Image 1 (spheres, rainbow, N blue to C red):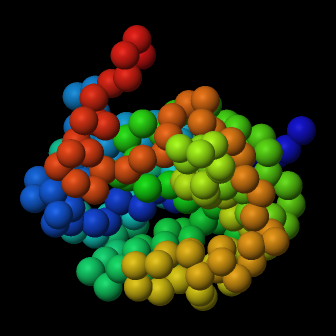
Image 2 (tube, one colour):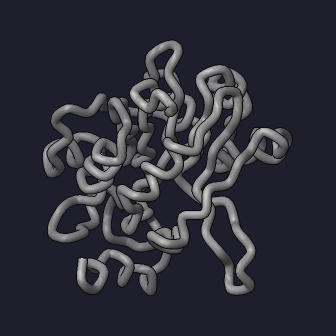
Image 3 (cartoon, rainbow, N blue to C red):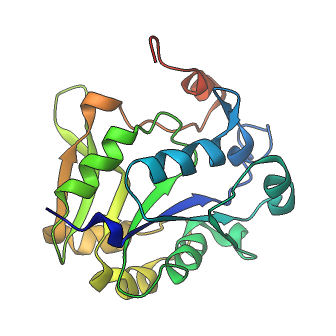
Length: 205
């Protein structure tokens, strides 16, 4: 059995939500709770030993309006330069020797079961990523993504602009193991006004 206690979640929540025009995505509500608070709880309940939350846009407002007790909060002053800066800031707060499970604050339907599945499938030295079937049934990599502790320095060094870890994942595809999380959702995030319906609780949940 894997030692999932060695995994810290890094929740990227620094964006301004400009395209939606509703303020920071971190403060959008799901089940009456701010997304950043809701997802921090999902990551913790899924088995992560601690949760690092990276804030940026309106960080003080987010801290006032969301309960992040028990989380390590990192404010990224360079958030406007892109997700890469937030990823580096978050990885920098992961204790030495721990893996990092990177999640996005605009993925409201992320399930505890998906977090557990990714943690449970991880093997030393690899990247383990949640994946979701596309309309043709092929698995497409999504979030969360678990980076082994041995890889964190290289992942952080490769992060730039809005790419985050994409460059690292593309150039080290052989290290990536996909975990089918389609049973617990489709991995969609909230980017447009049409996506706001994703904030609604799932029927029967």
